[in-house]
Length: 344
Image 1 (spheres, rainbow, N blue to C red):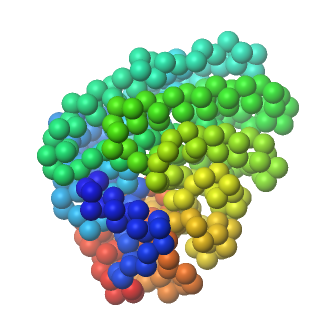
Image 2: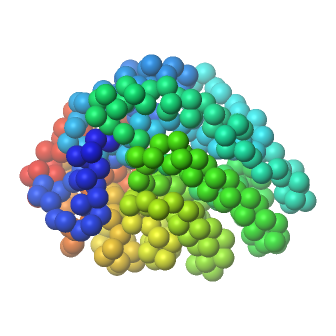
């Protein structure tokens, strides 16, 4: 993000009202690769392509906030390999990994990763290092330290079913696992900040927090997320959870979150009531059915309906209710922005 874009985001979070309303999207490899007409494998493996594709997105749509911006990542497998998880790279589709914990007893033997040397993290840093000068020549800077969240990473190591069962039947082991993963995340975001001092935001992505009830949220989510979001002294504390988010919304302020990307299945006004007026909301057009599979007219109508329904337009970034799909093409982006202009 440029200095101007970052200042714009900070003003949004500070509560300044804009006309037209801000437009921004959470984008990762699949959308950026599609925009560049490249395969996901080439995008992950070719640093020059990664740079060109991200620069193209920024230059073609400078009025749009592309968050987090110049994100060096390998999808969901960015973090678990640091603990020793085996990566699986299909020719087409998303990379994944195998869980490494055969049971709850194995958690005690889990070794704490070194974020400077373990897994895919050195390759992420190498890419950021290699292209930092090119990005800065284009007037952009690295702004976010990013990581998947503690429940997401923990479930990749143990398995989803085993993780959820363990919350009920072996909570001590699950807390031990979350303690280790939380320390890993803190080490990782602090290392990113150490490497790139311009970082003034933290992005944590965790959909699994949307699959548990209030009691479990307070026990297994809130304390760990609060520790993560307080681990860096930054201006933007960004949480992505596009699963069920009503419980999450009620705890955003206590966890230190001030920017929330949530599911399109939730009404913006209801999320606002749960989150309070201090949190900036980012949403919530359906990503798959409208941004991806819909027509330009579908995009226009969905945006108009959303903005007509919104009661409080402060601290609102009009966006997708989740990640941006690859099929969200240039003409749809233009239609999205035009609909916001017409409705503001």
